[in-house]
Amino acid sequence: MMKILVINSGSSSIKYKLFDMPAELLISKGTLEHIGEKGSKFADHYSGLKTILEKVDSVQAIGHRVVHGAEKFKKPAQVNAKVINGIKECCAIAPLHNPANLSGILACQKLLPGVKQVAVFDTAFHQSIPEHAYIYGLPYDYYQRLKIRKYGFHGTSHEYIAAEAGRILKKPLKKLKLISCHLGNGCSITAIDKGKSVDTSMGFTPLEGLVMGTRCGDVDPALVTHIMGKEKISSHEMERILNKESGLKGISGISNDMRSLEIKANAGNRRARLAIDIFVYRIRKYIGAYLSVLGGLDALIFTAGIGENQASVRSRICSGLFRYLRKKPAIIVIPTNEELMIARQAYKLIGTPR
Ligand code: ADP
Image (cartoon, rainbow, N blue to C red; front, side, top):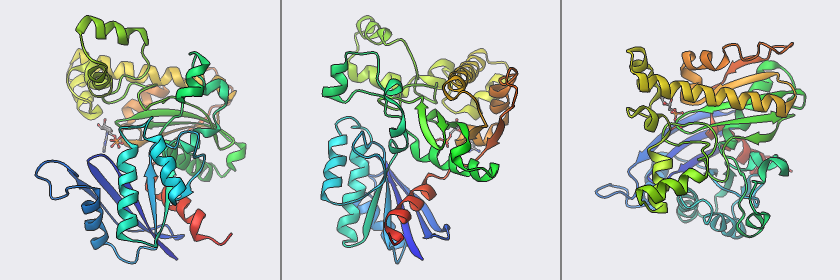
């Protein structure tokens, strides 16, 4: 038995779950918010984690979510000086996420010296994507010098729900072709063949792909410089608009929250209806593409806030979608549990004799 604390350090929040492994028993969980904000009781990640460690006891290992592992981390890694340096290097291409993840790791090192830590990367599951799917149509030199390529995100969630789907279908992953849709505030869709990610909608950053709560997803890259010139806005401001003012929120002009949009759309609001139509259409388009990537499909899986709870959206996505397939795929809803997946991976790496 091993008590594993799973930490998800965001820029202004820390989420935690304590598991007893390998029984997968959830002992406690919680979220601290406003980390590092003015007037907050948590000046930084160190003070936030100190509070968490006062609430939990007998922690024997810690699993951390780390957003970006680039090409360096193809699987979970036990934290040591080399791994910390590697995560630091990845900060250059993930400046919004990795620094906060790293702060959590460093704070735990200080607070619980000697307790083993494992870093689990959102990008790792997608490292199996083949070159022809991850290289962009840009000068190849940018890949070599600047590491510009598709990385993909939400990997821990996609890997978890694929494993659960295998269990539900009572088939080994090696025999399954799956498409998994993680539809929360951030949304991504992944083609999974024999348990391995072969393509995913998010790219160099989590901005590419589906229309999300506040992110635009795929757009013509030429419009970015066009808008910047017309509106006289900086690259920083443009990035903020594409990440925070677009997607469902930008199209509807009402909200990034799919529940509110459904209520408005049902009451006759045209822009709310349009935002949902665009959201659904983009997902259907990707499913069509991934059907041809996979050359068949055993199951379409839905997870996260919208995927788990909004049957109306799921049914619009699936309506008539598999009309032309001889063998109809299963459609499954699976609640995601990224923290449990991190605990499983940490336990596999350090809790079991090898
Ligand atoms: P995040 O990516 O921030 O973790 P979630 O997975 O919580 O996001 O998904 C948030 C989205 O799911 C919102 O658009 C919200 O309206 C929608 N949603 C629908 N039903 C629920 C629910 N019961 N709980 C949480 N979110 C829900």
